Amino acid sequence: MTRPDGLRPPTAGRLLSIWRETEQEKNAMVRGLLCNAAVLAESCFFEGERLFDGPEAVLETMTAREMELLLKSLAGETALLSSGENSGFDTARFRTMQRERT
Image 1: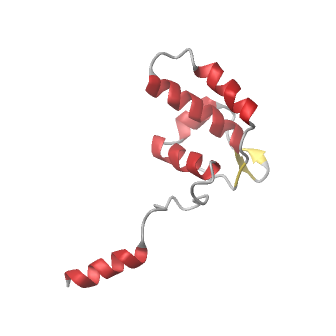
Image 2: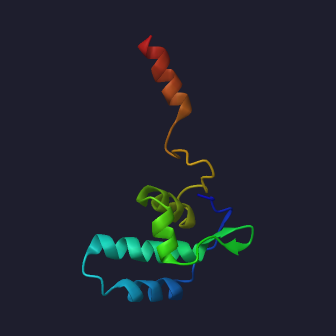
């Protein structure tokens, strides 16, 4: 998958519209995936162009975890991850724990 090099958050009004477009889905998990895919389809860019043609392309291309990471980046919770690394992984702490084991 080509990773986005830019994220542009939708307006609050657009988010509400996306939610309304997916609210008829009875299954909460499916509704969440559809809504998140629609947000990402409109928010992910590569070299100035939208990365996805629509929500279906997001769902066919990305795992739920990849979607989650991008949504967190979009919300400003984490930096945009270009290498798929775990943003919560503390390398220094891991090395300290390794030394303590030996």
